[in-house]
Image (cartoon, rainbow, N blue to C red):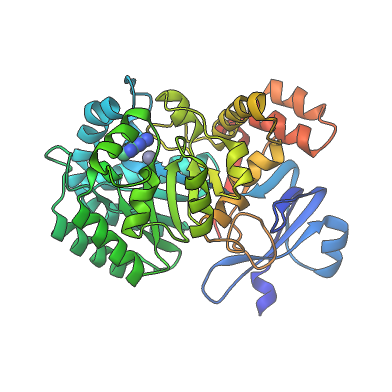
Length: 429
Ligand code: GUN
Ligand code: ZN
């Protein structure tokens, strides 16, 4: 009986081991099986010659010339900002005021939320993204729409209701007590339902009262396997604002630490303007950074310091941060991260390898989210979310990838020249 659920795919195959070392087979075979929960998992993977011999009779889909790789993981994105990609502003705070908050106010309407959530997931899929840690808006209806649409597509998704009870305009500002009751109810309704997970989501320190941050931390303690997501140290004006609001705190990050909001499965976007003590604290608390290079370049926020993050053993991975970010495409995000890494390199001598960039958007991101072994590597036992890439999707890609001498050159050609045209199929476990 079990054999009827086996399914294999033959193509070039990219996987990662648990340490982030890329494993590549020019003629590979990925064997999967459906479990009792209806979820497809990797059973075996490696060179076709070796793996096929271990699974005689398994039905095989032949994908000549294609590359199979783990689905991409986006560590920080705002689905309600889908329609404000590319809205120009002087910087973060005017951008929030003029574009973001007005766009998010519309998500009080469940029909609007459902329409945008559906488009968002289809767009992620077109771009090869299979898991995303996602901000909804302050309206509970935006969260229900997010999870309903994710569930209908069988996706592993994490999201949450934004908490913002101060310094926020009418239409998005919530009320302290109600916001915490809503969060608790949404956790009960959605967290752990199939592949869905809940993230407690204080927008950022300036938009949350002390009582709201305290309440968020209390919920996080009571539900230790939920996620926490927020923003920190993105922009100089924002950092100054937090210093004025919390003069007693050692740093912006320390504000979250004081409230008890740093822990495993806590993910903070940006982490640009940190110091060494902050990075140590990130490491000690196993808090992760979501690096958002297209957003940081677009909004002029600054450059994530890859060298310092590596030295501090800080958990980190890549994120689009749409709508501050300019693209849903992981290829665009990896290329922007490469540029940012070179900025660090010129000062500190660190360079980012193509396979390292790829890891940060797959298995490394999974590890930072506390999902190691679940998604992101195509290791046996993990869920079979994967993508089928066409390295010859354009004339220039054909020339470049034909000339690639090794895996790093192949991955680099895809990072530099690739986008949604490369993603031929996205397969969901
Ligand atoms: N800080 C607070 N809210 C936001 C947001 O929506 N986007 C970004 N990039 N930074 C924020
Ligand atoms: Zn963000």
